[in-house]
Image: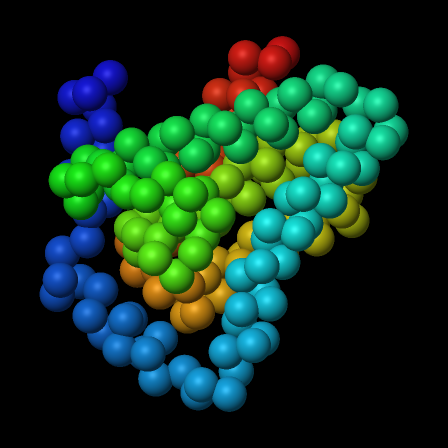
Length: 173
């Protein structure tokens, strides 16, 4: 398992010359749009939490278990990747909640929200599934611009989220 994590991180870890132009572009986005990007970044969490609450209210406990399992697995995987990429353990509350001190690679908060949305998506009707895809896509841009996540950190967060959701759905049946 450790060897596969190292191989995956070696593929995904950013090289400074590859991401510089995209980071410069993201830094040039006008500052007056920061509230919009911040809202889009927060919308992923809000949508993910609302999916869990609706499933809980409707009595869909298998869906809730898959969503919570994917959330926990994404948090654990994200924190492990931060440890491997940075070399030190991050402050867990900062990484999980997504504060300003959260590590930029990977964006653990985006990974958690993506994991929940992807895990619950098969149980949704098509319009809600499409809305979930759009929320994640817009949240990606919001997190890269406002949350200070690197482009490769955002891709890593998406991969962690999808992997956690797949593992939780596979384990949950």
